[in-house]
Length: 317
Image (cartoon, rainbow, N blue to C red; front, side, top):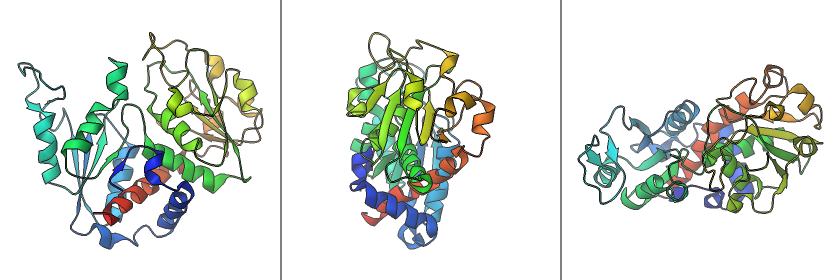
């Protein structure tokens, strides 16, 4: 594996999940792979789970790990080609990337959507520049349009907790005070469409996701209908995708909050969320604190998804 940005990069998904579960049983069994190798994690945006889980994954594999916070612990980077650099940015990413590559063996990159230009966001300019210019294997630690480490961890968690061979999995939009990217729901849809699950997406009118991620999934605009007999409920907010409302908040309808009443419509479903979560907007306290909430276990599996991806990259160096 040279790059990891979407579900297709994993190849056979069943085999990838099986490998991840084996890694989880023996986290330190592959330390020789990373001996004298260095993992560089580059953050253009803040992080808690991604930073800690990915660094821990690298350490489990015997790697040296380095973390670089762009615009905090480094020069401000210019990312656009052809500009006259007479502003507050001192270094161009076209020099910075190959320099970073010279200090490491594998690079993880985290760079969110800017919501300034949909075409720029969906071209994944920053992530793709690292892939093109670093000379190193590159994986996404959340990009403008996808969060494949999170989605892989989500699938691992579903595999561990499912009670039926083909569970019903519902991705539901929920209200939030800020405009959030589509990265997490995009990747969740990307994975669920390839997994052996009955997948349903529910959201208010105007919140349709990019069709390339939705693909053949059922889209239901009535949340109550979507939640009926669900085995897993994955709540997440996202801003509008379609023009001319790209990146905008169209609704803060609190009737979409996942409550005990909403969960009562399900088949005693497990509640999932990528975290951090706005309590009593996305989900009520009683739901996220209930025995059916597996958000902590889901977050713990971020270490496993990252370790499986990095392990594969080390095996192909």
